Length: 362
Ligand SMILES: Cc1cc2nc3c(=O)[nH]c(=O)nc-3n(C[C@H](O)[C@H](O)[C@H](O)COP(=O)(O)OP(=O)(O)OC[C@H]3O[C@@H](n4cnc5c(N)ncnc54)[C@H](O)[C@@H]3O)c2cc1C
Image 1 (spheres, rainbow, N blue to C red):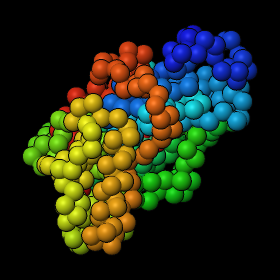
Image 2 (cartoon, protein in one colour):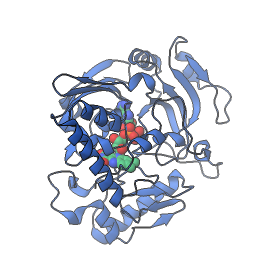
Image 3 (cartoon, helix red, strand yellow):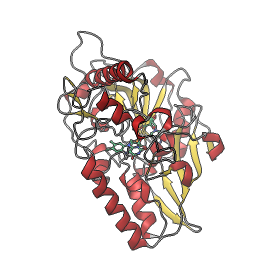
C-alpha cells in the first residue's frame, strides 16, 4: 500500500493507521484536501483518503480499520458541501478498478460504483437500453443509488436490480431494493457502507432515438439552469416530496425555487456564495466561497422562507465534516485551484464535462 505523509501541518499519521496491514494494494493519503474533489470546490482536508484497488482490497482495509474511525464514501462530490474544517476519519473514493460498464442480456447493465451516470446512460443507449434519465445527472452510480437520483420522471429506484456493497466491518453484501428503502432523494443505506457495483435494467429503445432524447434533455437544462457554474444541483428538496420529476407534481406553488423567490432570496449573496439568478434553488460558488459562506447562505434562505411562507425547507445537498476553527488559517482545500486529482478515474471536472448541460430538473 502506498502511504503519503500528512499535509496539514502534522508530521505523523494518526495512531489508528498502525493497525492497517502493509500489504494493502490501494492508496492512502493523509490530510488530503477535498475541495478539488467536489463540484462546489470548497472544504477542508480528509484526515485520510483511501482509494482501494479492488473490492477485496476495500474489504480488507475496512476490516482492519479500528471500528471507532469514521468512514465516509464520496463519488464526484456533486451533491456535497465539505465543511472548511475537513472530515475526520477516512474518506473512501473509488477509482479505476470500479468504473467498468458492461451490458448484459435482458436489458441490464452492470456498472462499477465509480462509473459516471452519463457514461452508463450512453453505453446503455448504444445497446438499446433506456437509462437516458441518467445522462444529465453528473454523479457516479454509487452516489446515484445512495441519493436515489432522478429526473424526467424516473429515479434509480425504477431501474435498480441489485448492488454490491462493503459494510464498515469489511463484509461484502448484496443489496436488493427492499434493503435500500428508496424514497425521494434518499435511501436508508448506512452512511459508512460503500457501494462498489450495481446492476440496473431499462426498457428497450432505438439507440439513435435514445441518443437524440439525451441531447434534447441537455439543451432543455442548459436553457433554464446554471449548468456551467459551480453548484451541487438542487440545494433544497421540494417540500413534501413535490418534484417536477414525479407524479405528485401538480402543486407548483410548493417548489423550493418558487418559495425562495417568494422570500426575496433569489440572487442573495454571502461572500462568494450566491443563490442563482437563473434558478433560485441553485447555490453557486461564484468565486472564493468558503463552505461556511455556502452553508450560511443556505441557512439564511431557510430562515427567510420560513418567515415568509411558513414552510421549512430541507437540505438536499449533504453537508459533511467540521466547520473551520475560528481564527484558523484558510483550509488547505480552499486554496486549491480546480486541477484534476490525477489519482482517480473521475474527478468533478470530468463529471462536469461528461454531464455537460446537466442540472437538476426541479
Ligand atoms: C449540475 C448538477 C445537476 C444535478 N442534477 C441532478 C438531478 O437531475 N437529479 C438528481 O437526483 N441529482 C442531481 N444532482 C445532484 C447529484 O448529482 C446527485 O445527488 C448524485 O447522485 C451525487 O453523486 P456523486 O457521485 O457526486 O455523490 P457525492 O456527491 O460524492 O455523494 C453524495 C452522497 O452519496 C454517497 N456516496 C457516493 N458514492 C458512494 C458509494 N460508492 N457508496 C456509498 N455511498 C456513496 C456519499 O456518501 C454522499 O452521502 C445534480 C448535481 C449537479 C452539480
